Length: 175
Length: 433
Image (cartoon, rainbow over all chains, first blue to last red; front, side, top):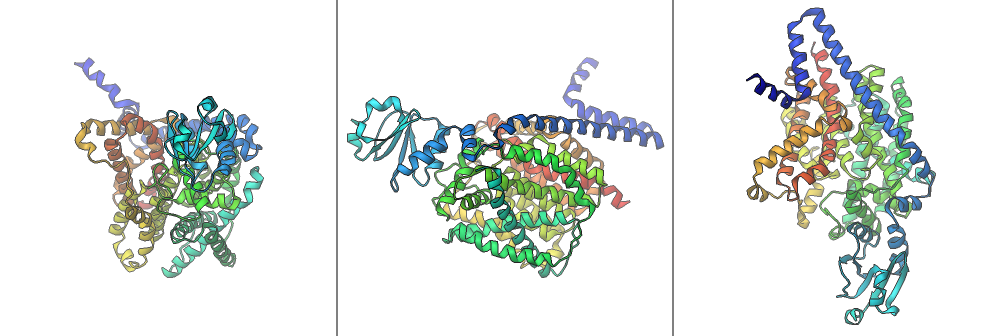
């Protein structure tokens, strides 16, 4: 019976057990002893909170050496270091090549790259396909391994392991 | 472009928010025919900043819908801000020793600021919708019905994207580091409000300790400067806490104004607005009845974006009540409760904040029941937690993964208010004695 009841104790958790303990002891004692005891409990909790805050501040300080390396970097370098080359590729290189209202299709790219592309190419619409297909006119961006499957004359950008192909006539483009 | 190039445009944005906020608050206090005593000068700056940011971004949104570019409205607000700041220079404010708290806190804030400017925004939410919305607003300079439909969560409101788009506009480039620095102003403003609330309740060393405690919380740090900087959760927490601090200082109308901007920061805030507006109307019925026409202002701020999204037929993907019939919802509900329990007792993330809060509420419950300000905030906190439990129960996504990804951010909505309320509630006994 006692063993079964003991099995219930972990369910209460240390917080509730401690609270129960503190409440019982403060109920047993009275007057000055009780006040001192409660003061000790409060001080103990404040010390624990201070220690955890200290740990947290130390953790923040431990980031400093890494932070110092990048703090003076220009914005463009920071974004390339953190998020990869999407800013450079889509915003600086592909975007100026697009004509008004031209749609962009990403072939076999990761979802995260898709998110960057639809942001940096806005207001141009961006869609993606898993495999090479060219159903509509627009600019198709794919890895340079697909170069053999597209017309060389349609390539408008090549670099960083990708090619961008402008397709005006979808049927011709798919050949 | 380095941090030094970033600083002046960001200071301009902050100046506009402070100036417009000061003028707005001045007119409110004139209309309310009362000049309330301000706890500290920094408290006033914090109030002006947060009110100004809300008003400027909201009016920018209205203007952008009718075709007025963001740059134009920000320049006009720049002129208005100058009038506001000139008006305030004629007032006399004393810089008491209370400001010294921030001199001592400055080294730690500087360390935080260094991490802030070391990286652009990079978390999923930021890449999937918050930053793209800034980019779209900057490119269009207007709000079109289809502006955000290609991004995730087009129904999410525009406080953060407007701040970001204004920053991009001033740089004429998509500079995410500058946006992060601009957003740091919201966290500083909240620290000023906390200090104002504590100034008459807690001795100097205690206030310093409390502010260190709050800024050292892991999740708060991560949202202020780290991984999640650039998501709107810290703004939700900031506006909820700002309103709660005003209600603790017995300024119900100002509290409603701050709370009105909670759904303007993120859609989840609509529950808070309904609960807090309802409870404030209940407890301050006579006061608010005198100001009933002026209540239109906070209601407009709170409901403007919601009306716009409803007119466009946008809705939240999380409210799928059909899920209730398709799953054993009691088990999902119990799991959601356990998740919050686990979150609250996560010492690494929240230190002893929630333990202190729960203990303070339990110990002081008889004083809380006699205090309408505490009841308003506690009731609204409960309503907000219930809404999160409901979302976690009916979410169409895989529940455990969704909770793991969202619970810390949702808890952050409540944490600053929980912090302020803990200090307020502990002080209740003395007041009644």
